[in-house]
Image (tube, rainbow, N blue to C red; front, side, top):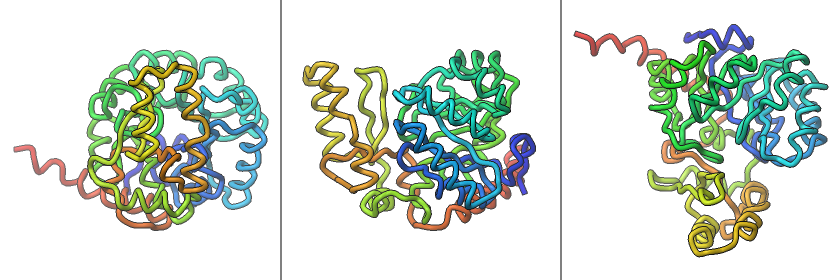
Length: 314
């Protein structure tokens, strides 16, 4: 079995994180991943602190294993969510879409291990100085908010820039991706899109069907003009948004156009108006299965690949 320093640090069986997807990664999904040996993560997204506290209670009612909460730093509720995490003394905090400096002291004093998502070397160095326990190097292949660099480039750059454990994210769906991540210097992986097909994932059946039927050119990135690029499935909403983005629509109207669209996808499966977040690996997801099976299978696939890597050296 593949073990790494992140397993020892967090008390988990497998070095697999489940991405903290907004309105998707709820307490039930996080508990299923944690119970399966990985690190389940609640996605706070744009939800208020009361929602996050409720989902923390859900996880604790279903498992006694470690879990985390992801804070989307652009959220208007980021301050109250940060406080809830500290009050509940959540084992792990991951952060995305911004700089977590404002909350680091609060979380560290509460005993939380802080593991920020870092899209660049500069951010990795900053959070290292601030006391992060590890970092998640997430490439632009991922779904949701994305950076410019790919996972293949970002992971080794981050590995060389910090002494902290590095978790690879973006474009990872199976054992091959896990093995490649370890070869690049990571000691664990984070997967988001792969867990959209988990039985415990609460997304609308239409959303799951779109993921299962996705092909290699199924995603697109919008929102670059506003400085917050997002990867999602190519749907009518994505096409309409792209047209508006490059058609001279004022920034405030463009910003308003995206409000609430993820919830329409998650809760209603609205193919016309919903934003179906997805990474590029959707084309590699072909069945619905328990979250625990996903965690176990990717690690079982990775082990013989890593063990046999020496066959290529003559």
